[in-house]
Structures are given as structure tokens and as C-alpha cells.
Image 1 (tube, rainbow, N blue to C red):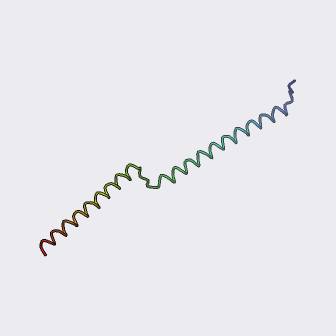
Image 2: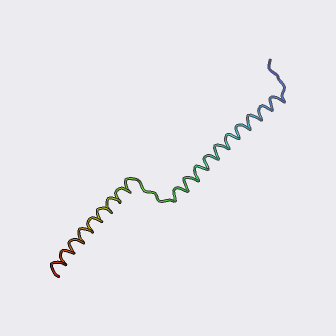
Image 3: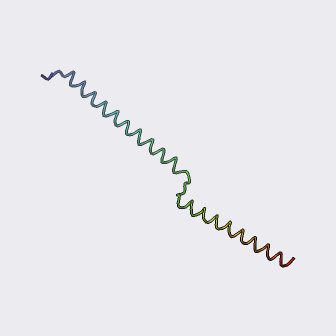
Length: 81
């Protein structure tokens, strides 16, 4: 048996509205937090792993070339002196 009491009906409508409002507030808070996180991370300069490895390889090659040039200079100086 269902009650036709308007007080209970109105109370149920208020509770449904409140539940919907709280759910919407939760979604908005989550979206706002996600957006703030994106903004904070967007200001930082990150590089990809591929870019890092490429620069690391270039630096290693440059160090090898410097060592080779130092050896050549030392050999030339030895011939002159």
C-alpha cells in the first residue's frame, strides 16, 4: 500500500534534488581539480624519454670527439717539441 501523503512526497523530491546537487558538486570539484593539475603541470618543461636519450647520445659522442681531438693535439705537439 502506497501513501498519498504530500508531505512524504515533497520530502522525497527534496532528497532527490539534494542528491543530484551533491553529485553535480562532486563532478564540478573533480573537474576543477583536474584542470588546476593540468595548468600546474603545463608550466613545467618536461621532455620525452626519446628526446632525453637522443641528447644523452649526442653528449656521449661529443665527449668521445673531444677526447680524440685532445689525443691528436698531444700527438702534434709531441712532433713539434
